[in-house]
Image 1 (cartoon, rainbow, N blue to C red):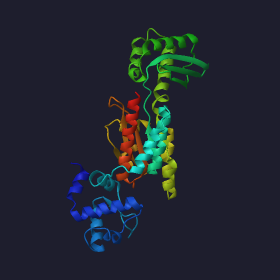
Image 2: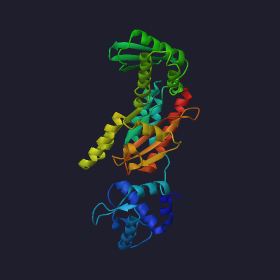
Image 3: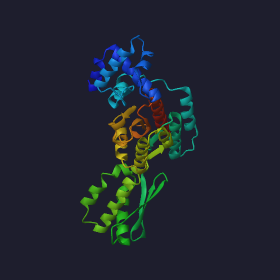
Image 4: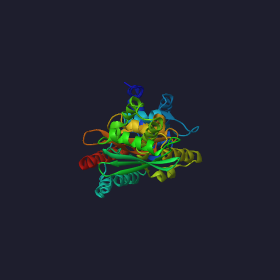
Length: 354
C-alpha cells in the first residue's frame, strides 16, 4: 500500500468528506475554500470551528495548504494525487463531447497527419485545455536511400519508402567528402536496409559498420553515421509531437509569474526538448495516466497536470498517445473519459486502415 493510500485509509469519515469537498470546490472555482463555505456543503451539520480544526489536521498531513494567513485552504500536490487515486469519481463521456470527437474522425481525408492534427484541435476545444498528440512513427519499409551533395557543408538524405512516401533531410557531412565516398555509403546502406523499416535497423546498422570498418573508408563511415543520426532524430521523434490550444492555458494565467511559467512550458514543447520523456511515459503501460505538477519532468515548471493515454495498432503495440494539459485543478473526472475515448478511437481508425 502506498503512502497516499495509508494516509487516506487513516482518515475518519468526517476528515475524508472535508478533504474531498475542499478538493472538489477548488477544482470547480480555483479559489481557496473557507470553513464557512464547507459547512454549507457537508452532509453532517457541524460548526465552522470544527471544520477549521479538521482542515488544520489535513494541512498537518500535507494534504491541504493555506496560501495566505486566515485564508481558506487549497489541496497540495500530494492532496491532489491522493484525491485522484482514491476519491476521484470518473464520469461517463458526455454525449456532446462524444459527438464532437466523432465528427472530427468522420472527416476522413485519408491523410493520417491531418486527421491527428484535427484530433488535437478537437481535444483542445472540447476540454478548453492544451492538447498533445504523439503521432505514429513511419514504419513503412525502405526501398532506396540516396545522398545528394548540395554544398561542402550541406548534404541531402533522400529516403524512398515502399509505400511511395519520400523523406528529404539535410545534415552536415564530414569534412572532405567525395562523390565516391557518398556513393559507397549509399550502396552500403541500400544493400543492408532494403525491405526493412527504420525501427528494424536502428540498433543494427552501427554493429554492421563496426564489423565492416575495414571495408569502407573513414569518410564513408562518418557519412553513414551522420545520415543515420539525422533520420533518427529530426526524421522521427522530434517531429512527432503536435501541440494545439496553447492559448487556452495562457488565458488561465492570472499573475505575471504564472504566465511566464506557462510560456516556459510551451517554449520547451515547441523546442521538443523533453520529447524522450513524453515518449517513455506513453510506453509504460496502456490506459489513462495522470501526472500532477512535478510528477512529470516535462511540466514541472508550469504547475500543470497532464492526462494522457497511449493508442495502439492492430497488434496491440503502442504507437502514439493523446493527452490534455491543464492547470492542476483540472476536472479530472470529465477529462479522463474524454482522453480515454479519443485514444481508443484513434487506435481503432489506424488499425482499420492498416
